[in-house]
Length: 173
Image 1 (cartoon, one colour):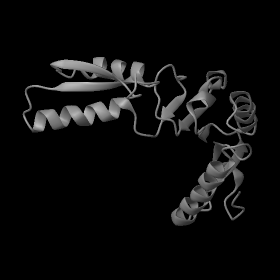
Image 2 (spheres, one colour):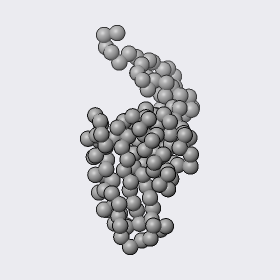
Image 3 (cartoon, one colour):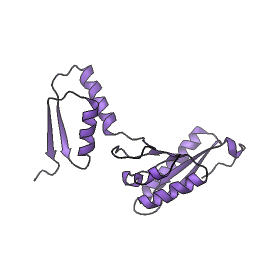
Image 4 (cartoon, helix red, strand yellow):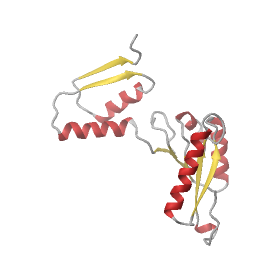
């Protein structure tokens, strides 16, 4: 969706939008497009143009769509939604991605996470511990797919923790 109003092309802010518009996540992608349209309406500026491209939640299609956006002169892209779609984005030079994922491990350098992640959560916990003068802290870590990221975040946060417990998310194990 493009605003074709009075500003010349060189004065427009062109932003790509990488979302799943087909496949099993298409409903989510279409909701993101609608939300973006509403945000543009609220901003009320005809200087901003948004160019949606389909990722189908597939890393290869995400790369192709990102390269197409870059070739059209876009250097800022909102998306992709899912971590797996970041896989090849380091190949898209001189483009910054504002990703919806909250995973931060092994992400390309040209990706900025816009969602809450373990680092921001641990910083909040650290502030809470300090402001409430809590001396003894334990930490529970689920044995789950984000376990490594949580452990890395804990190490980087330099939180003083008395004991770390790891637990299985399946109660029968």
